[in-house]
Length: 92
Image (cartoon, rainbow, N blue to C red; front, side, top):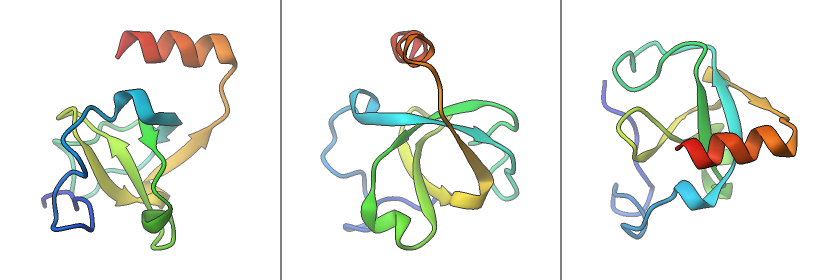
């Protein structure tokens, strides 16, 4: 099953890297239908997307390096200390 892309013409929004726009991290707890894109128990950067949130979706930077929409209940949002967020952001 292919991940759902952005609502605008089913493509990534502007072609620029979203990594710098990640607002936090989520932990993957389910991956049914997306085993190649999502690894269980792995941290993923999440990008703010209010329209997606209204539909119970999260925009996640997955294994491909692109940001795609996935069901929000596949993840647990984490509150990480600032130094941990910085270390994870620098590593990606």
